[in-house]
Length: 364
Image (cartoon, rainbow, N blue to C red):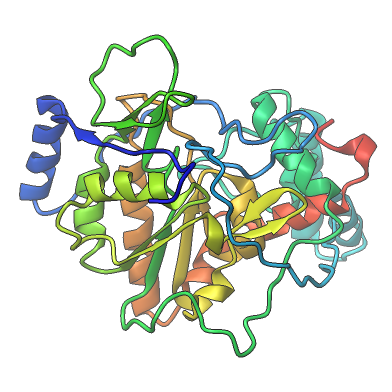
């Protein structure tokens, strides 16, 4: 082990019996019968500060281990039409039903619609959502979106003759974020009521990390690995991430590949995840992450999941199973994953509209 690198000594602790039993019962039943999904309200990841200097950094540990830096070669993105421009175009249309729909949208905007925290259960956003009020968003999420708005363009690294990160696979590829998506690492001085699923010991300057697994995460991995090639892609350092992934998948049979901070594209102080560098067809790739920064480069392939900080009533992974099953059905009918996600969430149009929104009109 290199000098100066934190010493990690993970201690596995037993998962609460109630959570483990509920997962086993669902697995024995052979599937999910669309359980009721609770309305969640957890805050957004805090990797972006008010000055956007630390945007894109995900959870601990943060040591002196230098990460591999890649220069991002980027093309400017073509600005999307804002909803106001679309509305003006529709107003000139002679079709009565289009005019009626335009008036209906105008009434909705007069009521000042509000943008909610991103979730697997979020409705379609599209360009119009960039004009919604942001007053209900957490400060961290507002700072994240403001950071994306100020970028001159998004990074786009060309693979060229370089070797892709992953080998070919016959299965479609499901890329999962780690922190606040599958787990949460708590480093506070006060002890949470629930026992952690994993304890990671760092050096004296960092202390102990208590890792909690998101509800149904092990069941989710077991079910989804049957149909997808599962990849964990985290912006955390490898020494920490490997300990957590080993605890999530002790047998190594569920998670096929691991990508870390050195595989991210560092751009303007943030860590972006570019699916084009994986070497897999984008039409068969899905990225699930809780950070808009992570999915911004591949918004057509992205699912924004609600950030998780320990809510034991959380059911986002169950909702994600339903979305993924719908995508598989859509694919069997000849459709592509990116087309499905574009219709389902509209994140690409949303991000482009944000970059096209004047600063004074941003989030009202």
